[in-house]
Length: 143
Image (cartoon, rainbow, N blue to C red; front, top):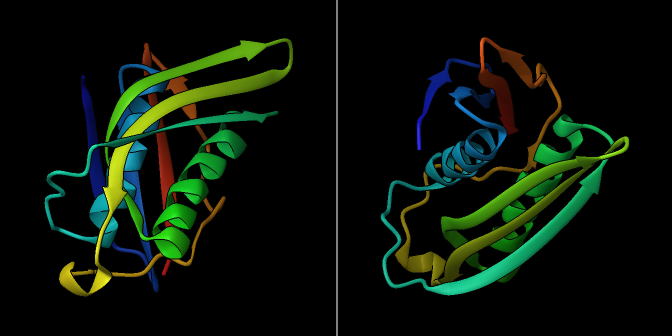
């Protein structure tokens, strides 16, 4: 895997610029930046798999839908993603499809050191671009 990300100063939010060699890596990196924005704790021993699928008309909506689901699982079910096992992004006609298997598990929020609580993943400044075989985007997390 080859991706880079840089957190940016952003008023009252968390912004991160991501660059990757493929769409799969861009979405994987986005998931890890979401997790890193919440906690520095290394999540060990969480080995439950979840398969998720999404269909949307744009890559940006697909990415926001995916990250919003991770945030929902964390907020409502106390389930935290620890890794991405498989990911497949395909375009059929005018619809993007994401199939992803993530690993994680349930945890005690009282035992985890939280850095911030993400309220929402926004579309602000988000545009997935391809240039010279690399994919990039900016994600802004509303805290």
